[in-house]
Length: 135
Image (cartoon, rainbow, N blue to C red; front, side, top):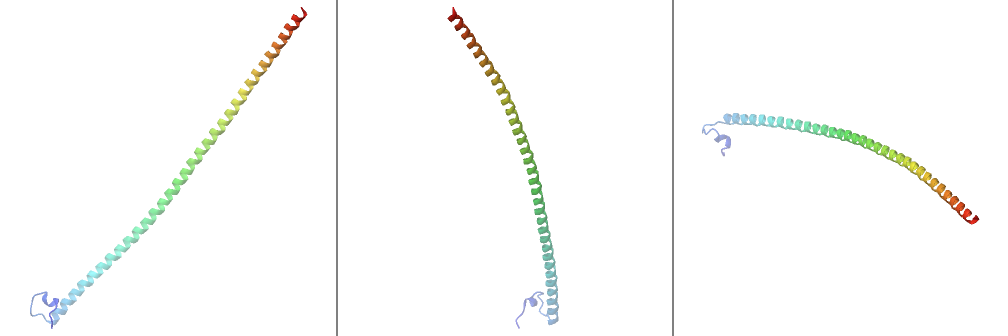
């Protein structure tokens, strides 16, 4: 029979089958406890991974909520700016209409004065011509 690695571990030449079996069982117990430890570690890693995944999902949902809040805030700001622009536009149009009415009134007054002066000058010139013609 070929010697196994179990035979050579202690270095003793008088190993019996019972000692080899006990040694094998001890090693099997060590392997079993190592496997159990690895299984627990794997379960712990899996729980950690699931926890991280839940955290990622929560962070993603929180980020989406913040983006919605930001979008709402920006929309409110845009609406406020649009209202201000509309107000300024209405004010400017009203002001332009008011100034147009004032300047039109002034132009009309100047026009009537010019017509009056022209008629007066024409009447005076006609009077001068009639007087000159009658003399």
